[in-house]
Length: 118
Image: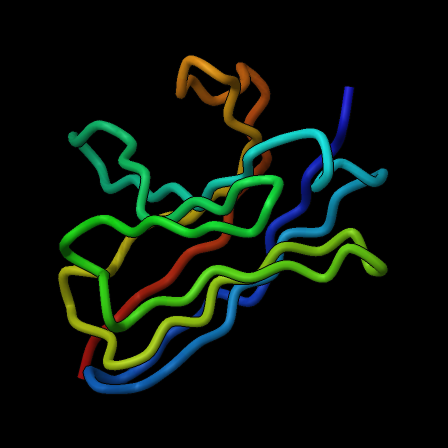
């Protein structure tokens, strides 16, 4: 089972930027579609961005134009660059693999908290 460790979250003012990282325990980007998800209390976890094995990217409408997903295969690390952050982006952010049916794996890391507040 691949282990995924998220980092890079923090407190940022509205309009600010953060870059999240997701370190994988082994090389998986050529095998799995990868996604960044977020969750707030009382709400379902939502997919905000994904990147395919070929490098194609997709974004939720709420983050399109502000967030960018990327990866460094040499470092086994997935990134999420978040710009123009809004208070509604406040959430616990996770990375995960996504199977061909679009379902994330059952294993979730600890996530990294992003708080957007003045």
